[in-house]
Amino acid sequence: MDYEVCIQRTLDYIEENLHERITLEELAELACFSPFHYHRVFHFLVGESVMDYVRKRRLAHAALRLLNSDEKVINIAMDLGFQYHESFNRAFKKFYGISPRQYRRANFSLDSLHQKAYLNMNRYTGGIEMEMKLITKPAFHIIGYDLKTSNTDGENNREIPKFWQHYMTNNLGAKIPGPLHKNQELGLCTDYNTTTGEFVYMIGMEVAEGTPVPEGMSYRSFPEMEYAVFTTPKATEENFPSTIQATWVEIFSKWFPDSGYEHHGSVEFELYDERCYGNEKQIDIYIPVKKQKVKV
Image (cartoon, rainbow, N blue to C red; front, side, top):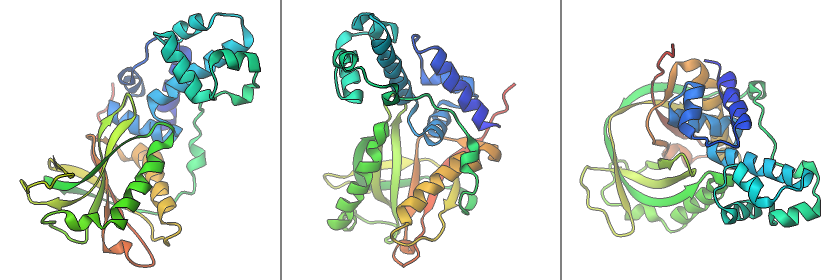
C-alpha cells in the first residue's frame, strides 16, 4: 500500500473541507486504514495528531482571512467550524499568542501561518538498521505509575522524559510488588483518545494476575496478541533517546507500508532490560499487529 498517497489524499480532503465537520473516522476510511492505525501513521508521517492538524489548519485559514478581509471575527469563526466565539478566541490566542483582533491590527506576515503538510516519503530514505520479529505474547498484567499526557504540540515529548527521571531518581520500581521479571520495565502507551490526542503513559513491571495494587499505582491487563517486535540499534547514552525515536519513525514510514500489517489495538510499549545498563544501549519496541484487510 502506498502510504504517501493514502495520507496525502486525506491532507487534501482536510484542506478542501475545513468549513465542514471532519472526523478521524471518515479520514481513516478515506485512507483505507482502521481509525487507530490511521491515527498512529498520520502522527509519525505528518508530525502532528490528526485533529490537532485540522485545528491548526482552520486557525491558519482564519488568520489569512483576518489579514485579507474585513469580515467579522465571529463570521470567520463560525464558517471554519468553531461553534462559539469564545472557543475560537481561546484557540487562536493559544496558537498565535494574541487575540484575532490583535492579529488583524498587527498585520503579520504570511510566514507566521501554519502551513499545509505535503508528504515526501523520500525524506525517510537511508534510515537505520533494526531487527524485527513477529511473536504471540500471552496475556499479561502490569502494575506501575500513570502519566496522562497528550501528543498535541509535542507535550508528551517533554513530559515523558521528566516522568522517567522522577521514576528513576526515586527508585519507584522497587515499590512494585512481586515483579515477574525484576530487570524488565515497560514504558507503555494506552487509553488513547484519538480526538484530543490524550493518552496514558505507564511505567511498570509485569506481575501475576490479581496482584494487589499499592496506593498511588495502577493495574492493567492486556489480552494475548500478535506483536511486531523491533530491536533498536546499539547506541551510546547520549544517542539513546534519538535512536529510539528514529526507530519509531522507521517502523511507521518504512516497515508498515510494505508489511501487509496494520496496528491492532490501542496499546504499544517499549521494553527496558539489562541491555540498558551497559555502554551500548538497546530496547525492544512492541506493537500489536494484524493482517491488513484488502480493500475492494
